[in-house]
Length: 510
Image (tube, rainbow, N blue to C red; front, side, top):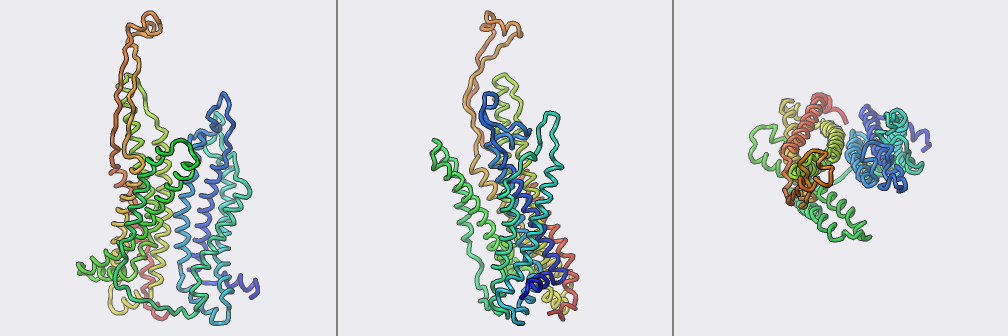
């Protein structure tokens, strides 16, 4: 097959194929911006220690997350975490119109195309779309870098617009993401390229998923709670602690997150089982059948959203810790007779983290919309057949809503609980040691005079206090309500496509 023919076939398709290419490019653009932002933070040079700057701070910035070298790794990690919902969105976009694409590729196989040619055709479509998105993302990054380079009156910058990642790092992001997308496409289409007739046989599901995901959740939470004791055990700066702590942090967090995502399949199946036993309305019964027939659809659909909710629950627990610590420090200062004020650094940092969680939920909602619309479009002939037999479209609309919301509510509650437990596993208590301070209760002149200062001075002892960090119920409630509102918006958008997908003409389509 000549390259020109390969490109022409890759660009052919319906409006659904065009939408899939555009959404894939958009996902690649967002992932590129998140990756380049993280690399930019890591590219900030650390100055050498001097008498004027013994902490080696980068004082050309006014944000402490960029000034202090020890905080840049966490900032870059948070930016990289934003790539997870973006990559999940890309995966959902790749499924848009997948049945029609698979039939088209299978037809090419039946017409004489080899498996390699069909694979290259699909890989070219995804790879070119992702490459276009990464190149546009690189352009947006470079243009935004110039536009946002605005030093203030003190010459300090709000963002690290004065540094640039190495050319190798830039090329790794711009070229690496399309390669990953192309490889993922090749893996997803292996059944189409192998068997063009698409004949497969599945045994009927006799029982639902087993609750093994709970083991992953428990292991993740317990491992997260063990991080602080292990850190105290190896606090001598040994090489073991240098790699053990990040490994425990990543492994336990991923285990809990995977457990929640997989556990959504168990939740979906048992929600369908309860609906089938107790529901009496047709919409709920239709939803129960769908939930039991494909319980893993919830895991695929809500994966990115639940990951963002877990991260948000952990952030809420961290905010509660910093708020309690700030309150305790101010109380200690008042007992000592001094005005300690408050330190807004950590709380303002948590504002940035909450903003990142909101962006992640917004991106995950986009992927949720794509998944719901793709599911409706993929089952349009079944919906049209139901309408032809007399089922009202309103019943189908309520069925789609039941199918989306029934597993979403308990899954969101589970994600919030796991995220909170992970956060509290690190910081469940706040404690301060006892201290003493000298207070001079006289005028400034008497206190400054060594001869009279002693008779007006008293020593104030402040006892040590240990206080449990409260559960941030209000913050968690707002996070859960916002996530559920995002799911409701997703259902509303998906129902807009239901009317066109239930037209009787769909019964005549191949």
